[in-house]
Length: 383
Image 1 (tube, rainbow, N blue to C red):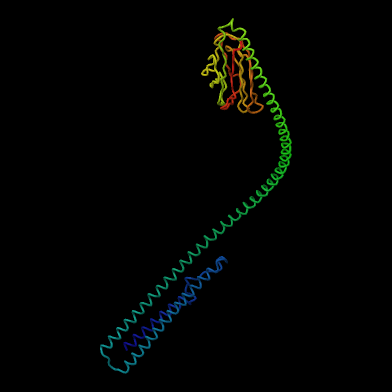
Image 2: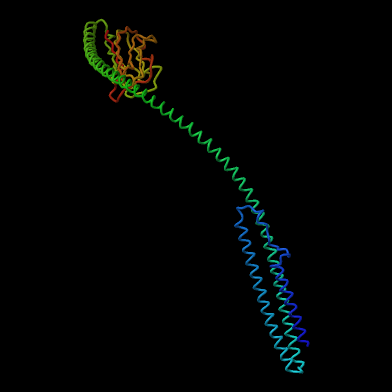
């Protein structure tokens, strides 16, 4: 009888568990913790809620399986209890040992029942967690909607900026077209200007050719003048010799020969003032010329001839004077119409003993010479 009562209690427990499980899953009056009003959701999020409902369905199916397994275990227990009752009915008396075994089995059954209850609690906790996750998903969807609105506004602004950019590009294209037309017009003008420059270039070339011919003629004239000057110097020397021979008796003190030639063998691009010093002495009879100062001092009185030759430096213009006691007597010019123009001049001066003659700067800058000198100063006494 005790075993029968125990079996009845176990069956009642199974019925309670089954009833509790059915009420959690299928009872219309019991509140479904995962039920949601789908009509209130946005149509764009239906798929998400469908997936959540499918997960809830899977959880319910798992619970049903667990309940069925529990019921199967309970049926097995019931079968065992029936077998025990049959054994009890067959055996009128049982030993205390068998009763203790039955008690232990009952304890085991209670333990299994407690485990099942704990499992039910865990399942309920999982359902609550799902509800919380669903709430989080709803909040996330709300945030997503806000982000979508923000992106829509941003897209509208981008479209506005795109239209403005298109207008700017159209304006830039118009400007480019204007620039192209301006460039074409400037090209035409430049072409005309180049043609005009070509004509002017030909004119300049013709002028240079004419100038070259003129310079060659001047050079020939210069050579002729040099030859004439040499002839004049020879004549003057012959005249001086004749005068010396004529007056040798009356003027014994004037038999002293005075003649010099000094030169410059280097160039200068900066000389622009003072005395031109001919520092290289070629001849200095009578020692009247001082190469340190560039000054000739007459050792005796008489009639002297002085000749100077200078070359200007690369179109820089040069003008020099032959000076007697600080008074300019004659001038030589190297013009700047072409490079390295030569200026020459000659003068006959009456000098007293101690008078000074030199060459000074008048205008321009620099001079040109070589190792074989191009710049010279010569002087000699004829009477």
